[in-house]
Image (tube, rainbow, N blue to C red; front, side, top):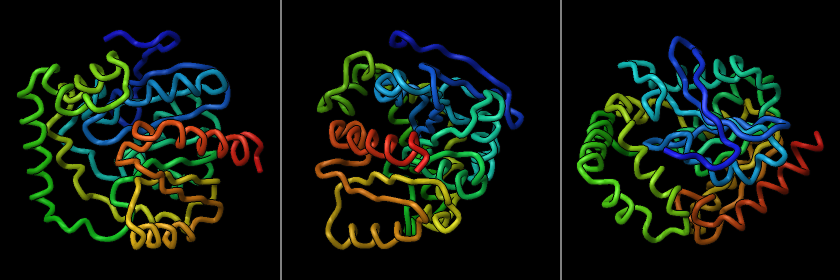
Length: 270
């Protein structure tokens, strides 16, 4: 599928598997991790905006996109090792880690376990932020498998109508996202709930951190902000009107927050 101008693709072997990635731009690196059911192409619009000043690398997590999909390795520890292995293979020095949902959890725990790796951390509505998921593990896995079966049974046009008709995404990006489920392995069901809450990592995260959360009720906002107080150098922002895809749902507000964070906390080294 055609990529925007300036983007290239590649594959490296890291942590025992082939990991596929998309890349654009030059400068201080940003390594982006997508959420469940997506692939690295989720980041193309934002990455294109950032590529004027940064080397942006967005990869396909195992079981997604064109990366390998072994039967095992979907636990948090292995996902962290995949990310670190990719960064090493590409020679990414002091990258900003950017993650959404599942990728947000992966990025957060990478920052906690490998504090020397990231220069900064941006989390977009990370999966299982705090508290219990409240769903039986096997039930959660079956929900994932059923969602994949139902989505793959639809045509790309049907998926676009069902999932992206009410968005401002360009047609090419809608088609990329609608196609991403075709390349999702059923093995990704093993990701479900296999990690502790993201906030458990906060005490061990030392780099500057920005957490962008969906809109929420006051009580949920208070709980989120209290949890973010654990960060040594962190800021949590609830974006009005945004859902789980915060950058997509409120691009102007989130881009402003991201740009401000990059300039004040990451690029300046303060």
